Image (cartoon, rainbow, N blue to C red):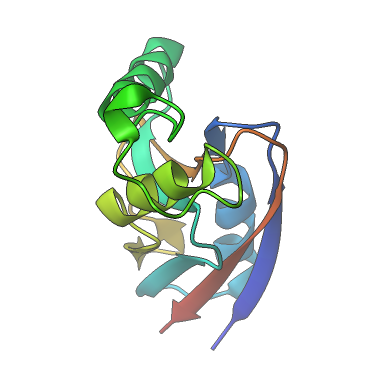
Length: 140
């Protein structure tokens, strides 16, 4: 069963597409039919399958999550206890809990079963740059 770890470097909060790396992994595996499990090894970022045609989608998603879970320095977040790692840390954990850290994608005829406008994204929830590891595991 093929498995690999890919790395995604982030520059702060936002969506970072890694569809091409995943497609290359599936193609190189030689697996015709199966299930690709994508798993991020961190607790302050998450994974999304999202539209990759119009960048306004990313802009709106980022704005929504900033409004939904503001930094712990915002007066509305005074209830947060975990603040030792900065005002973006606990909100990042909350955003990660609201989204997902693992995604299953069918592989058919040696290709990811994504729709025409779908892409795979790492959703970075922290302000500063990070190097994130994503495990790709393909089961035939």
